[in-house]
Image 1 (spheres, rainbow, N blue to C red):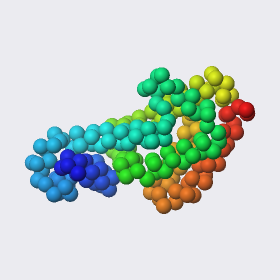
Image 2: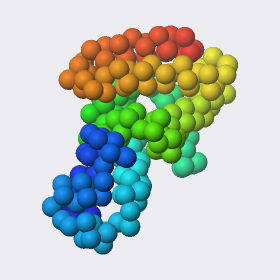
Image 3: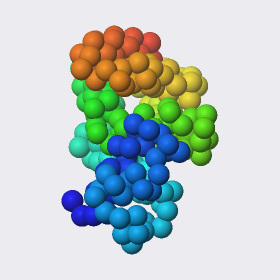
Image 4: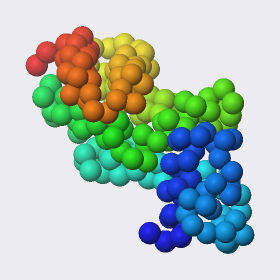
Length: 207
């Protein structure tokens, strides 16, 4: 890793262990093995380091979509619904499982999750970033997806946003429950499978 990458890596670990406010620039520099003044050659402030972490986490999430082959709504010529319409129950469970394990075990996302929950009352700005990435953006994507699927007659007609929340809420709950116990992921996945099965049964029209 470059020195700049090492700074980001060590800062992410320290923020996850001690919190954003509990970590000083000196702490980060010491962990990297450089002097405080040298750190400022790469970042102007602790906030800028944190901003680079947010950018890194966002890239990891985008990378997941590419890995799974799931289209994004920033590519209007490829409607996401066209991909999901072809999925049967097993296919939907597979994608949901892979996404869940990624969020639970990815070293960057899991540490960022911990930071946000530590700072949600002490630093509302950090929690606002977490809320956007892990709540608002996720629900917004699914709302657009389910709206399309309702319009195409694949899902029963209804409130697309409420449907998105119904799908995502169990995932978010399980991530919250198991974020500090990734070794119990199989237990979480069994619960997740049942949630996806029930969602499929309620919302998707029979062929």
